[in-house]
Length: 436
Image 1 (cartoon, rainbow, N blue to C red):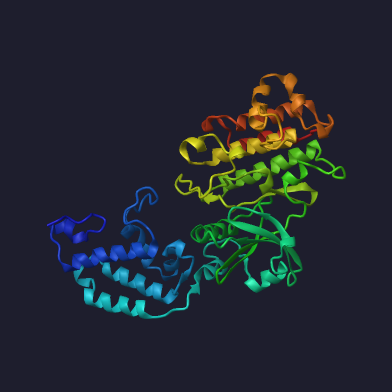
Image 2: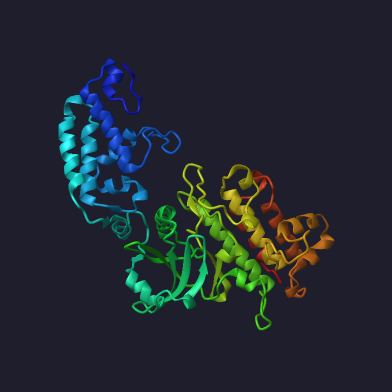
């Protein structure tokens, strides 16, 4: 007789060393939980105190309000709610500690066959959960596709604001709210990643509340359409105000640049230290930093690569933009909050120098901004050479030195040597104060 895997083994085996047909029922109950939740029967990494699926599920099965939270998130809410409750009840019946309390396999077959034979119209449970606040601290509005189609004038090309790996962003106008918005339509061709990503974005954005983080105004899960509705940022991206400026456009002055840097740093500090679980941005760059009236900066979170930090794990669907990417990513494939610090250092250099993170129009020795700046930091006589010429010398020399020093600390090759964003905020606030 083969011994059962302990996570599937009925508790009576540990007491008596004996197995019977009711022991198989217990094991089947564990498998049924795996099918519903998408979780492993044993996971020491992600479930610190509840290593087995039985331990994790036991208390939750006793609370009907917790059942929908236990369902595999990759289902994206597309399941019949009453049916899933019945399956959970059946699983709980199977994993009763007392063997005699478990059902017969014939009863299980009858009930599962009944549930599988019924044709259910999928209930958008995700929408219900979001509106009920089970995943959120604030409630974004659920829009229909028709509303957003009208807002963007049938998603016409003239309304396009930008495009990422997973979706295109349109400018829209909600007549019912008299509000200009940015509508992100996720690409259909990335179906698996799109579904997983959409759930993550809604979860993340719905619970964030900071003056330097872009607001989620609403979402749409209408048919095969999945869209996110953001507040509209009137002045576009930071990138639009640093590079290739037309003669009629005034360059950002030094004070504005430093205030933008402080705002972005505060946003990252919030994500790293004040959100639980913490959020690692993983794709900070000048095109993801948007500006409102008065050049007030806000970073876009829930981007194509942003993920929630769970127990130290960082899941990267797409590699981050390589010129902003910390060197450890190429070695380990992992990103942490210190990787965001590195990316911030690159953005800070862009603000100081007015140069792109990589500019292939420059000589071969100098296209990479970090590689161009770092060797020059050893000689203060080079500092003025690195400043954006559009500033025309209108900057405080000692503040320039402080800003370059902070950027240098953020760009340390060894991640443990970089400061955390809380310290960066403190240092930058000093560099930005009384800057004239």
